[in-house]
Length: 146
Image (cartoon, rainbow, N blue to C red; front, side, top):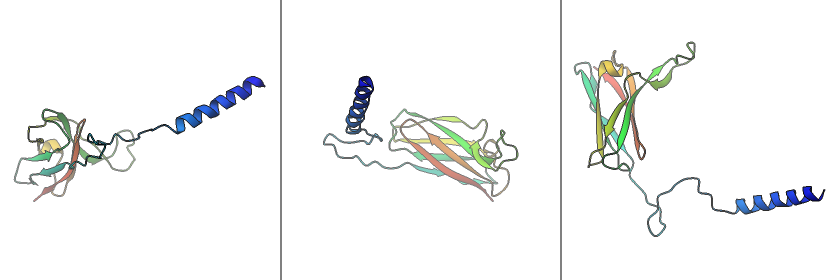
């Protein structure tokens, strides 16, 4: 009985001590004075994907990246998942579209895809290009135009 009481009191003391400690849930960037640093957000644009052009280029400005960072660009397309043939369309990676993009000194990166490579066959077809990296990311939808 005495051991049970000691264990219960120890558990309560442990819970009280850990609940009062600082537990940061997000790593918020701060300056030397402790003030929050507000950063810009990435901006992604694309040249139009048209029937007349064989390819299109997606450009991104990544203010939180560092020059020389390598990001991964990938095309996502609405597809029925292979693991659920009767399921609904989902935005899934398109095979063979993953490319590495190195961030320049001006914090920009670009990637070029052919229409065939990106799965754009009919006017109105849409894909999503995502950039992902350790310090920044970006996303844009590209639609095949006339």
